[in-house]
Image (cartoon, rainbow, N blue to C red; front, top):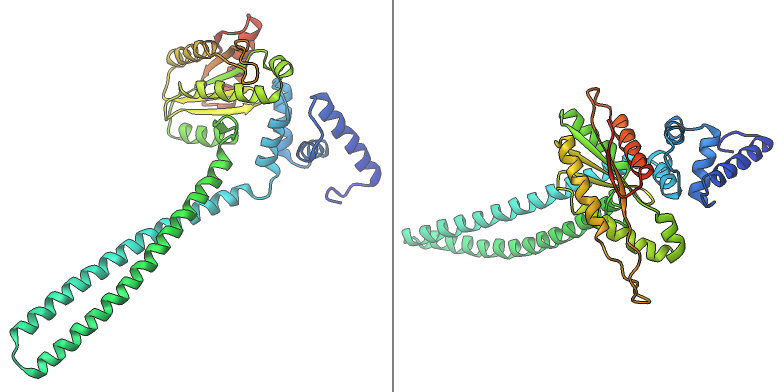
Length: 335
């Protein structure tokens, strides 16, 4: 067995893993159960530490969170896949550049050869020399034909390289983008934050939660809920500049990272988001009736003097929870 457990130990862990899933009202399917079993077995320190932090900070744990944890800690060699994608993309770019240079060089050679041979043909009257020149011209024509074949092969290679590059871009998008909302997956937060912190940039975080979304899902169903969630995510994303990072953290919760933005500006952006979401109108495609408005509660924080990314995001969550306790549909700064 993977964990070298006795049957009695395995049975106990299976029971505890099931209790864990039941505690957070998470359905039992392979990925969820695998993460729960690893957590109960204490077989992966980073996984256990992250789950414990979520529990200590009273962050919700659901199927989306467990899937993210699985992809980040338990899926086979995700970092190697990322490196492979970068290497292949680099190779493809090199091939495209080489084919362009090769094609240009051959064209230049043909032009130079033609001009030289024509000049030589004009400047000599010797029959033997003319015979040589004629042979060279014939050879030049053959090179031209060969070059045409090569050019076709290069064009085909470039087309194939372009198609492969598109496939790699699709793979990269699947790795980084949440398919439902179009926002980044939570695994991208630390990667971007570490880069910005290393560049000594200021960062603000916005923790966003859709108010009473669980009740909305219960009443109108998950299909309608997914459509509404997607529209709200699109609205939230519209307030983020290209330099910012909008992330779906889990379920109906988002996290926005804003580099080189101060707390006042981040709070203003958060207020615009809150107001924009409140103005959204949702119409049922089945009945044509207007659905209830939905609102968001937002917590705002900034990177402290110790440059602690974890503290910043925890403070943003605390601000969001306080916004909910104070009546929801509001923005609260926490520092």
